Length: 239
Image 1 (tube, helix red, strand yellow):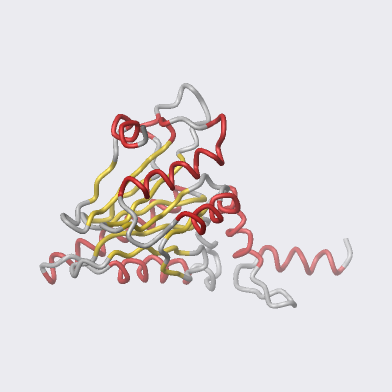
Image 2 (tube, rainbow, N blue to C red):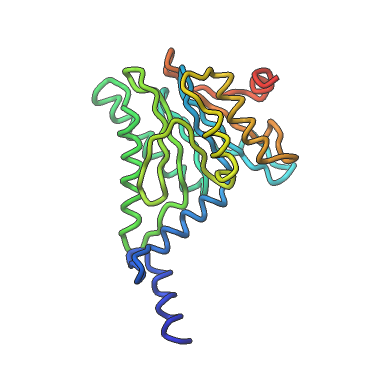
C-alpha cells in the first residue's frame, strides 16, 4: 500500500483532520447521505408554514402510519428530515426538551431560531470531536413565533443553518428546487402551497407516487398549532 493511499485513508477516517485541500471528508460523506435520503419539502404560505415529506415505503408489508418522518417539537414547531432518520430523532428529542424547559422557566413558547441553534450547536460539536461522527441528516424546522412571524429553516449536517421561503432536501432536491423557484410566490394560500409541494413530489416520484407515502404537517398563524393532514384530507384538498 503506497503512502498516498495511506494518507488518503487517514483523512477519510478522522473527523477532526482537514485534508490538504482544506476539506473535512467525513462532513462531505454526511452531506452525501442526506442526498440519498427520501425527499422533504418546506414551504411558507400566507398564513403559515407547511412541511411535506416522502416516507419511502419499501415494502407492501410495512405499515405506512408507523414510518416516522414528521416530528412535533412543540405546539408551534414542526420538523422533518432527510438522511439517517434515527439521527434526526436524537436531535428532535433534544429540541423537545429545550422547548419544554423554556416553557417551564419563562411560561412562553420558545422562538424558532433558538431551537434551530440548539440543533446546529450539537451538529457542529460532532464535526470537531474525536470519537464522534457528523449527524448524517439535514432537517427542516418550521413554525410560527409568538409575534406571528412565519419561519422556515434548513439545518445542514455540519451545523450551518439558513432561513428559506421554500426549500427541499433529500434525493429529489435537484428536480424539485427549480419547481419551487418557479411556482412559489408571496401570499400564496394553503391550498396553493399544498398543490405546489405535493405536485412537485408527484412529478419526481412519477409512478411510485401514492398518498400513503406522503406526510404533510403545517402550523398556521391563527392558532399556532401543529397539525398533520390525514390521507383523506390530502385527497380532498388535491382534487
